[in-house]
Length: 406
Image (cartoon, rainbow, N blue to C red; front, top):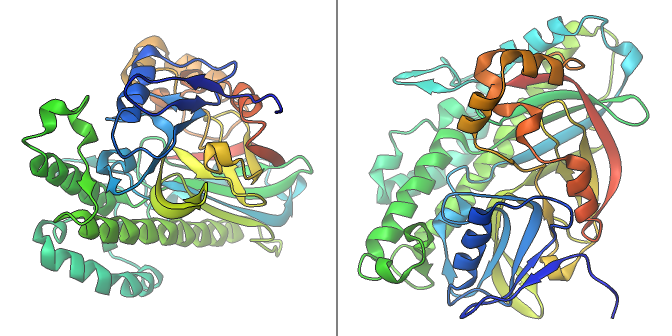
């Protein structure tokens, strides 16, 4: 038997944990979360842990959770369908303007972005454009079926968030690959409506299990059993949110390409190579000869030959990868570098001057509101990639030159 690069953690009264974490830090609290999840009775074979693993709500970000006969809404999380899209263009570095500020401004104007402050949502459309309305028309019927059962979902940011970025760690980047070709890449998910769906079903799972919560290692691990009252509704809702997220990214990519054409007059092709992948989601898959549900909470599908995206932190390189189909990892890989500290800790530890130095080579915001995204708050992406060398191979290495943050 060939040597493997994962660490095996045996779990008392639970399934084992296989963790691809060689050479990367994992905090004690995240390890405890993994043990908690591994003790659930419906885990299939073992948990698979990616090298970007870090503390999450209920279960760790950077974990692959295979289940039979049950589903955990908090494991999928509230940013349902969050993921990445990337597109290669026929432009090269020499085609970009010397000063990239104008390109960043054009992208910022084309794609609503930012957080919600009370009733003010700076990241929503004031008036939904026709191209977003057209996409919403294809989603509206299934959404109406959801709101008929769960009316509170109707009063969410749904169509007004389709084609918008959001805040936090969501971003749009212009990158250069190893051949100096220009790529566009962005990170976002199902926005306000996905958040509402996630929170609603997490609450329903906890309410349904009220009598059994004391027996759970963490109340956030409340689950729906297959055949139970809310199980099928959740599967339908999460599937819809994942479709919303994928189309949200596609709409933004079209907007980024169009915005770039207003700055760079040279004709260019886009989508010469394109990838669109979730990293917070659940779907049915077949592994080890059985049909199961696979929840990837901060992990990407890496079936043999499948393309994926592993971004570094703001100011670090990113990777277009090809899956190696490692069955022990349920054909998965990391979704990024992974945080080493909380947002609050990063804001306490680093200054605007630190942010300016760390992102000197990138045209981006450099103010106190983005310090929580400083590269030093994340793991070393090279170490993360080395730890998962059995899971993916690198196809392209990208370096950012423009970064738009929410």
